[in-house]
Length: 190
Image (cartoon, rainbow, N blue to C red; front, side):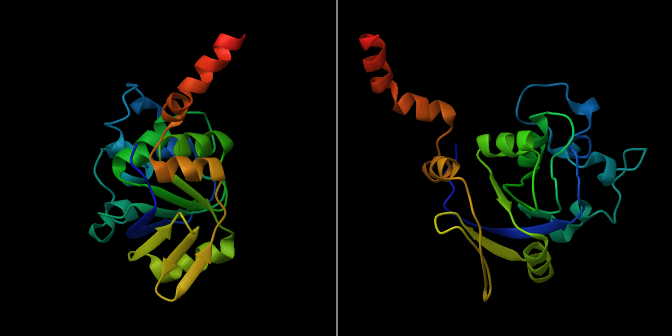
């Protein structure tokens, strides 16, 4: 897993509340259990018309946001049915950080477990950040838990266990392997 300490990227804003997993990756695209190949289908109901043509006005189809990998969005992001494909699709599209007012529990854990960053900010801070940073580069400093854009600095909370895993670039399997000797010692005792 790629480590994450300080990250700079362009921002794209989709400030809708209740963006569900059917919007993130519709069920008809869930034909694989590989983690790649889903990026073209992220936000498909909003990105494409009924004939499969890109809707020019949708933000993710605009050249200005082509290399944005930080998404600022609304409340209750990733709600709906449980599907890890939603995290895979966003990641495959290039999104690495989502800043929302809140997340469904399942999406939140899937997103973090796939090595990405999910930041919770209140609506006032998200609005201010989106007005300043939309289409521009910002910095996410996970070590100091700060979002930086020019003179603006916003603190955020982040679960310590995920913070350490991301900084070290380790997933749950890596953490388990780090404990292999202790596991063997325990097994020998019982």
